[in-house]
Length: 124
Image 1 (tube, rainbow, N blue to C red):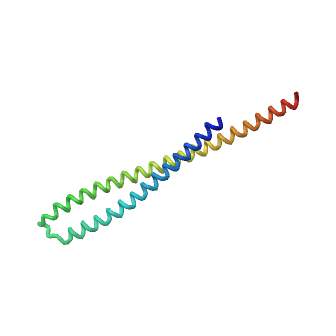
Image 2 (image 1 turned 90 degrees about the vertical axis):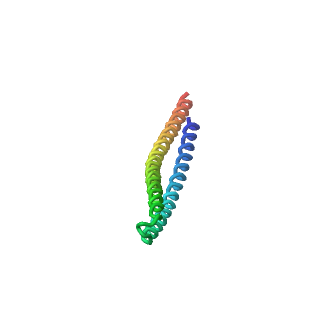
């Protein structure tokens, strides 16, 4: 029983560590994407301000704007995934705490059974 609980605790701990790494990677990716977006948007705005409205470059810039909007959508999706992972992490931590409590209860029960068996032997 203790081995199963220990295994479950180890599994949960490893899962939490993996989720933490995933969250950190998402955070880094989001920060990098955000910086890239800001730079590209600024470049696009600078280019747009320099151009004559009849210039062919406007079409290219509109296409790039569409790409940037797609990146924004990806960023939003990554942020939502990050939030879901944070919620899952909290849930896993709660599960881990519950398992710790159960483990402590089982240890206490086992200690009580050992004490009872010792008293029974002493009575005999």
